[in-house]
Length: 276
View 1: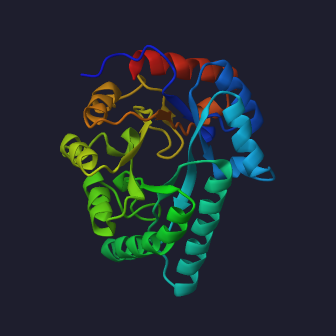
View 2 (view 1 turned 30 degrees about the horizontal axis):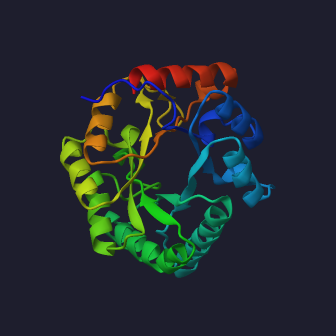
């Protein structure tokens, strides 16, 4: 069993978690609370000098952990698939400018399209952007999503499927982002985390909790300790692989977004220290 966390040097918070704050405020307040890193959602960079924003984060004493998100490769037409590939090339350029070593991929799916076809389009899409990503030193992390999103958000829904995709692509630039919200239910999770680590493919670890009842399947995530997910146990499995990266808090929550973000940030830090 993983031990309680006693410092915040490995705490990373996604900008989407404190969505009402502009990125400049998030940088200032995260740093003031001793947060060690930030994962930047692309919308937070709109209208900004991306390179300057990355430097601002580093000047505040934090690491730029990753850029979120790329992906959404499957589509019904060649034109739409190429548009997705083009957007992923732009995301790679943004990550390079930001100084982010990793892009998280929400891989995509098409309603009514067979999942095996979507998975093949995902593999093809990732392979089509690999050379570009490698040329600028940006890795790609496949994030398996909960099966409730298999219709339109991701045809990769288990860690086994993500590991299989990594094995098929077979590139040092492609790995996995393990998100407890999407994977905690999987009876094969511990074994697949071990497999992911053994392959050297565990690139990122995201944490939050599953509230009961869940009022919105997208925007009602909880703070660690608020719900059903054994976050500390899963962190232990992740760390047993030798993973030494950040614990990334990624919370979509209409409840928390509607409240005082400074108070929410204090709760995040407390939950991280006591329930992660």
